[in-house]
Amino acid sequence: MAGKISILSLLIEASFVVQLVMLILLAMSVMSWTMIFRRRKALSDAVTEAKKFEDKFWSGIDLSKLYNEVSARNNNHGLETLFKSGFKEFARLHKTNSRQPAAVMEGTQRAMRVGLSREVERLEMHLPFLATVGSISPYIGLFGTVWGIMNSFIALGAVEQATLSMVAPGIAEALIATAIGLFAAIPAVIAYNKFSHQVESLESSYANFVEEFANILHRQAVSSSGDAA
Image (cartoon, rainbow, N blue to C red; front, side):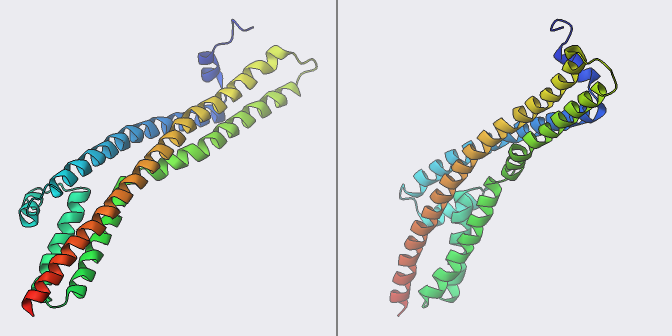
């Protein structure tokens, strides 16, 4: 019997509902793997870009010169976006409120917080989908399993003498649905946990930069306010 039953034949001869479940799970698996590779590259690039920008920022370069370099590029991400939004808002407010450093810094920090929120949202792109695949795929596979086993027992009720060869194909195809569900769920859960940790690490790095940059701008605002007085 084992020689006559193959996985391919079980997939082809499975009931319509079980086949539909398998197709849904395979589609979810393909989509999740696509997003896994995209998120992996995006987060890896974000870490590299953050380190590169921090090295340049703390090298002692003039902030105005750095701002001009960053502004010359339209595809800013990560720390570049936070620096650009913060310095731009600081320069704008400083022109009109040079004697009120508190007001200048409040607006500057608000602009950087908005930028930080947007960057974190960009880093978390596709993570909710991975979480969804990881949580519901086993249940979808379980539904296919229950349906296949139910059909097998219904078929048993229509015969007088039941044999293992009669129910084995139905149970086997049902278990394949569970296996595919786990195949889709496990990589998605692993990737979600890994990427979530990376996003948290990047968010912490971004938040620290915002605080450090705000302190630098605050010293400039206080110094300019003292000179103006």
